[in-house]
Length: 130
Picture (tube, rainbow, N blue to C red):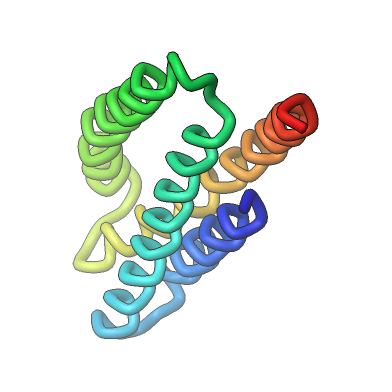
């Protein structure tokens, strides 16, 4: 369900955006765990939605492109971008915590907008299947 994806992303955004406010590493670790859970749950649901919406002859190709682009873009740009922001904008032992908060506050709202745009196409696909 697309609303479960939105809930998972909301959990990730809230925990990442609140991370700079936590005073200890234990609370920051809990926020990271919640963010990973929210992002992973929304990613898993995206694959299931693609399986349901894609034509039978194209499912494997569409899923492989989804996973390939997600891994290439996310794993190639994500860690270096986080390190660059941490080194250039923040100092001290809380630099990564502030970086994660900034990334959560800036990038995840754009994911919500894209998810709502995708929801209209998904609804149309479901209506055409009936």
